[in-house]
Amino acid sequence: MVAEAAQKLDRREVERLVREVLIQRLRGSITPPPSEERYASYTPPSGGPPHPLVVNVSARHMHVSPENLEILFGPGAKLTKLKDLYQQGEFASEQLVTIVGPRQRIIPNVRILGPTRDYTQIELSYTDGIYLGVDLPLRISGNHEGTPGITVLGPKGAVNLTRGVIRAERHVHMSNEDMAYYGVKDGDYLKLKIDGPCGVIFDRVKVRWHKKVVLEVHIDTDEGNACDIETATKIELFK
Image (cartoon, rainbow, N blue to C red; front, side):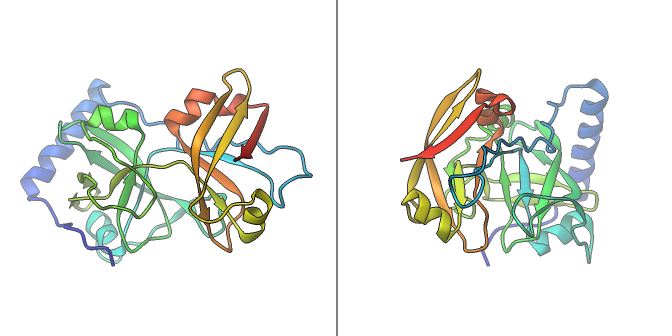
């Protein structure tokens, strides 16, 4: 299990932060979260790779360990499914948390994705990092060495993370069949070309292998906005 310092804050500190969240909500001064339902995708016509090529925009979210889930939501807490995600077995949960940056700026309604993991991690965009005052390192999920921490508030308690806050490196999930088609191996990099009114070419899309996954590219909110993914007319992966 990935070691991390996670403990309850002083009750008075939690109450102060919760009051601040409520005040900022009433004043309308909290930066609005992007719709986590916006998993925009484009699937080209059949006849090509063994699986349809899909690009999904991944909004800010949290992965949580069972221990931290109980601190945030109470003893015995379990994640409850809101909707399934593209990869089998993964889902957006009904549980939401508030994150508090070092500038005491707050982002509410950060959704937890399930199932639980053996580490806690928060994935944000660079824009989120600038707003919160967090210098986000670009990392593949699970690589927390030298990453910053943050405070997470739930309805039953709070967690002080000393690490685990990242901007996720853009990547493509591939099975053995997909890697054979594209001529790559786990850890290689591809380019992603998105045609459309705001067409772009993203370099360094990292290949991530798992035998049970289906072909899927993940980009973050900043990247999805830059290319206006919902208006894409064609997408292509190439070396």
